[in-house]
Length: 245
Image 1 (cartoon, rainbow, N blue to C red):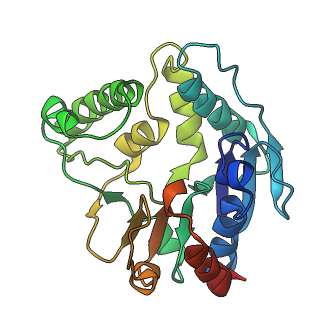
Image 2: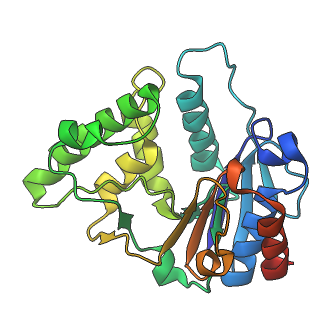
């Protein structure tokens, strides 16, 4: 299975702090827990033992440059012969903590069922630009799925996402994402996902910040971990090195 990381060096914790290369350890976590993984980085060159596909960061003076940069990286993914027809989308702050197989990687996890996009969006976290893109995406998803008798879930759970490259191409060809930003992963799942499993306790460690007395053994016993800059403290770095060398 191909695992793909879109990557920008500039905002990474590694550039800002230097004590922990989150991309390196994200890749190590995949290699330990899915031994047949092919690891591919799209974006800045990470200087690691991976397949690298160059894709420069978008001009930050452009409108919606973050969303456009995501779209640009998906264009690189969709057009590359180095990436297989199916792949798992990762992030540099996402770690796999337990052995997983292809069946697990193909599961779709959701936060909640979305029955009213506007009501759900009121409690959804994120910047205004992100929320606008989320609303636009999920308005389309519910409109597309409802006539087919399919439920819509908030799939933006910051977990590994199994994706079909031909579907990504279709989305890039048929949506004007440069001028009407949407979340490509949500569009993809709106088309492709038939069954969704709700996130359950013990699945995901979501570490926003470090709290005194935090038991890292509990957090590392879960299947996946999201790790944000404020949670990267020496004890956590030591635990990462213990697990992934």
